[in-house]
Image 1 (cartoon, helix red, strand yellow):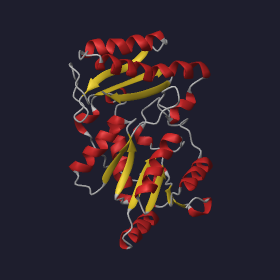
Image 2 (image 1 turned 60 degrees about the vertical axis):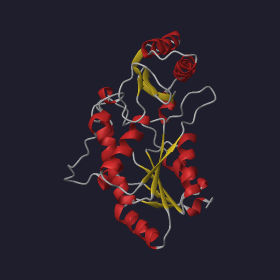
Image 3 (image 1 turned 60 degrees about the horizontal axis):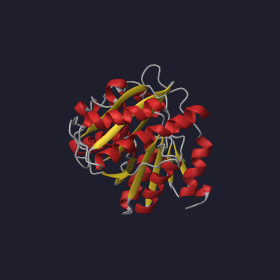
Image 4 (image 1 turned 180 degrees about the vertical axis):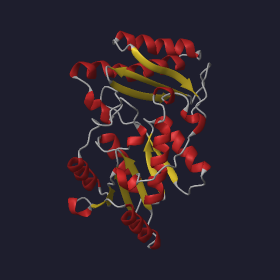
Length: 285
């Protein structure tokens, strides 16, 4: 499945459901990778994992308006349909589900998912309604594609935990496959939003992961006081003139509860802004 002709593009939810039903009847394992497009190596790693595990792989590209707040980057978010199609076909994806906004949110649509306290911390206070929008569209996509499993990356760690919780809470028979963060050679987590960075910002952005690595080093040396650990990260960021910091926090990796004393396996997550570009990253201690 490595030729462009092997990839079929579906726009209509009913067509996607028909394909999914046919896969189920044929006893084929269906894998799913939801994306917003602007595909980079991080996305491709998720896609390749699905192709490896599944008989049939579906990827979706949908820039979801309900997860963007006022003044965010919905209008300028990278859209590269031809490039995305070429990359997905090369990976061996069988179907691209490429719906329009009216296909996902038809006239009269009003039911949404409220994610609860998992969405109240970390990115939640800085992006009100974001995770409700994410959960709603993921639930819609799961019900349309009907996969046996779906692949998500750990870069959006809070999103991953919210999706896992939603699947458990709603008794959805879908396995959530986690994949590690894919990084640039200097450690910056791959993201579609990295394209917004100027050359000067891109150099400074390498300090985002450096700050997390410094926390990891200090923790391994025996320090478990979160105030001390986070102060080290703050120092690294400010040395790189990254002063607009939404948060740097240590949290329980499952409940996302705030830690004051770090233990092995804890999540360290941060979000910073370089002018109007917001970057997130995380490590596990």
